[in-house]
Length: 340
Ligand SMILES: [Zn+2]
Image (cartoon, rainbow, N blue to C red):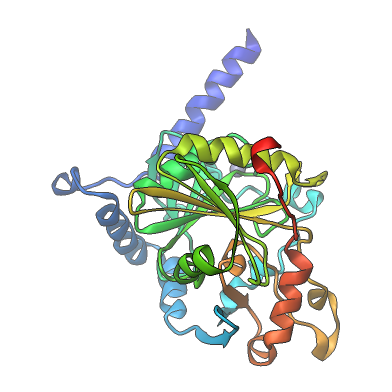
């Protein structure tokens, strides 16, 4: 009885904490679409939250340069504010000892957002890699695991149709491995958005070509990507599960190491899966001038390499990028997905 009372009490306390962080839309915006709501959220947060205001102003100044490969490019972004994420200590003890920064009860008092699918809270990311960078965190404090969430991820991609939704596994770029979350970036900012059609046409190994789903794997792209495309969510969910179960299980993450990008375009869902074999490349652990501080996540797999240090931004070259991808992307080959 006491346990039931305590859990009811804790539920109501959580709901009270959440209420303080929900946007109160003016009456004129009750029918607004998601683009308008997000625009409103940005205006509101930049007015009320100095940290967000400063970091988005600074983001306008970040330096970028492109490194061209055969048929694709990688953009290097010098972003000092991302140091806390690139160099995050994700050991179980550190995570356990810090207050979870995605739980509603610990959010900065100025931070507000919208609920989505009755399970998630949409917030602006105060440490942006994109001019519009969102965090979509679970309303519950539950570990970062993708299993059972593909339907949500694809539904979100249709709802936020001008965004790419992304997922970083616990050892593949997530800075809160203890609290489930997606992130979202404006579409057509990551180089992969412009390259995927070329990949599909010319640099591809077709894995499945059925009426209701098309699955292909990249060739000569430095990193391995398996792309699922379909009009409906169900076949993607079904085949993702098959591939997921074949990937090597990582004991620390409690799931295979991976990054995911999802978007909705021309009436079709697209899910891009990047299997991973390592959290950080060897150059991260080098010393002195040999060190390059890069810690790949979905954004890097999508073609934007974030370098928090100026010297890394200056010196990183094509061969370093190839090595970073080779060491962190898993060259996982699927021969007969239909019969897995
Ligand atoms: Zn939490």
